[in-house]
Image (tube, one colour):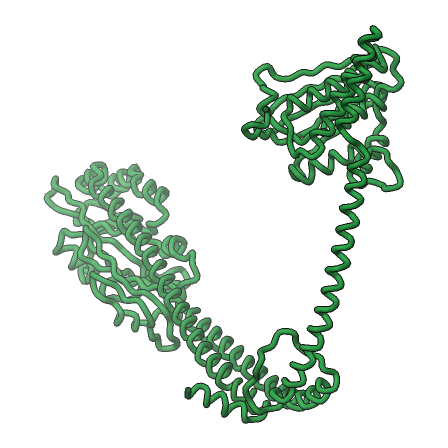
Length: 599
C-alpha cells in the first residue's frame, strides 16, 4: 500500500524531477555503493595476490638457500675427511721448502674451487708450526685468536656460520657468508679450522630471477645479502618470528611501505638461524594506481550520467508536451500498451490519445491481414487445381494396360525383341511412377532400375553400349538405402553424351564400394571424355542452373537433392580426359534400410 502511495506521489511531480529522483535512487546510490565495494574488493584481491607472490618467492629463496648451505656443508665435510689433506696438515716438515712442495702437490683446493662456483675462498688455520703459510693454509696468530669466530671455533666442534667483512681491490667492504668447521688431526692430537667463504655473486645469480627484492641475514647479525642495496634496513629484523612460522603482510620500512614475507631457515648441522625477506616494492604503488584509476572512472561515469540525465530531463519534459499535441491530432503510437495508466503527469495525458491511435491502426491492420489471407487462399486453390489438372493428364494404369497389350500382341506375332522392349519400358515407367513420391529406395532396387534402363539403351544401340556392375562380395545391396532416381541421370549422361560417337565397344561400368561410413559409387564410360573447360562449365551448371538452358538439368537436380538432404559434404566429383572417358564418383552416406523397406 505504501509503495502505491510513493508511486502516486512521484507521478504528481513533473517528469524532469521524476527523472532526477529516479537517477539518484536507481543509479547514483547503487553505482557509488557497488563501485566502492568493487574498488575495495579489487584492492583486497591485489593485496592477497602480492602476499601469495611474496610467500611463493620466499619459499623459492628458502629452498635455494637450504640447497646452497647444505652443499657448502657437504663440501666442508668432504675436505675435513680428506685423508691426503689430513696427512698434509699432520706432517712435521724439516724446512719451509719441503712444506711448500707438499702444499703445491696437493690439488684438492683447486679442484673444489673449479667444481663449485659457490665457494669464493678456502682458508685453513693450523697449529702446526712447521707448516709454512700459503694461499690456502695459514698459521694461527695472536691477532687471529682475538677474532670472535676463532674463539667459537676453538671451543665448539659443531660447524657454524658467521659473516666475514671482505674488501675488494677498490676498498669496498661487503659482508660474506662463511662456514667454520674443524679438521681433526689425530696423528698429532690436534685440529685445524676450515673456513669456506660463499660467493655473493653466486647467491645473486641463484636468487635474482624475479622482480621481488630479497634480503638475507644470519642470526641477529647484519644483513649479508640484499637485491637492492637501499633496502638494507635493520627494521626488517623486527618482523622475524623465530625458528618456526613466518610473517606475511604489510611491512613498514623507513622510506616506504611494502608487501612481503619474512621467514627463518634452520640447518640440521648447526645452531645458526637464517632469515629471509621477500619484499614486493611495486605492490602498494600499483594498488594505489589501480584504486585511483577505478575511483576516477567511477567519478567520471557519475559525472557524465548526471550531466546527461539533467540535460535529457529538461529536453524530455519539453518534448512530451509537444508529443501530446502531435499524437492527439495524428492518433498514432505503440501497438502493445496497457489498458490503463496511473498518474497525472504529461505522459498520462498523452496516453489517452495514443490508445485511440493504436485501436485505429489495429483495425486497419486486421482488415489488411484478412485480405492477405483471402488472397493466399485463392492462390492455394489455384495451385491445387493446376496440380489436379497435371495429375489427370496421365493415368498410370492406362499406360501399364496399353503397354501390356502391345507386348502380348508382339508375342503372338512372334516379335520377341519388341515384346522385350515393351516389357522393359513398362518396368522402367512403373519404377519411376511408383518412386517419384518416395523419399528412399533400397540400393538393390535402384540398381535394378539402372539395369532395366541400360537394357533398353542396348536394344537401341546394340554393341555400341555394354555395361557391367561391380560390388564388394560381402556387401548386401538390400541393406542400404538411397534417394530414388539418383543414378539414372548420370548413367543417361554417359550414354547420350559420352558414348554418342561410338559405333561399338562402348562400356558403362558401375562400381560400388563402402568405406567407413560412406558409399562410393563410380560410374565410368569409355566415351569421348571432356576437356578441362567443359568440366568447368559442367560444374558451373550443376551449382547454378541457368533457366534459359536445359543442359545438365538432370545433374543439377541430383546434385541439389544430395546437397539439400545429405549435406554439403556429399555430392559427386567428375574426372575426365578427352578421348579417354569420364568417371563420376558419387559420395553418399551409408544409410542402412529402415525395417520393411526391402519388402
